[in-house]
Image (cartoon, rainbow, N blue to C red; front, side, top):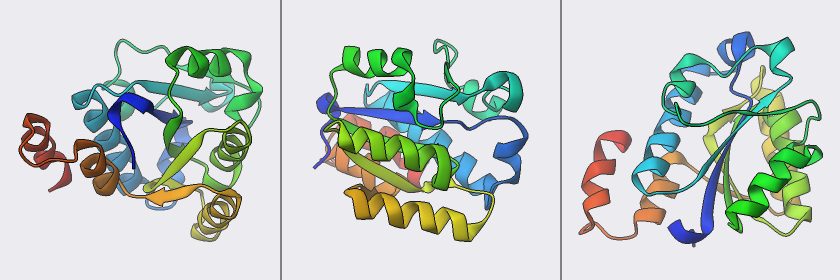
Length: 179
């Protein structure tokens, strides 16, 4: 089970024009936003990652506006583990459970998850907050991540799992996000 004190959220490459053309882009963006807002309510650290921002552009405003204190960590490798800065940030956080959302499921998300699993992280993929340009590539990426050991979750499922108790004040704060 996910625990707030051992979990971090990775937001991978929700950038520029690509974020607008992935399959079900509006729903994916809305769920990424919910994940960020839920993580903030639960005091879960968030790592914002960008793939080659000079080429793809910055994180889309709908996401970046929720993270005004965060500087996106840039990478050129498809896997976030190819960047010393991102690996250093993850080590500093000292969180072994990682929730992952972003794009594209079959490239950067897949390669990042594969490497993170290899490094011993427990990875849960937020399936309604990941996408690719095509539904087929999205599904292929998800299938490969599962075959490597990633666990599937959804926005609502992970946020309620992290809350764990409807008597907590955070539960009432999360309700508008999941309704």
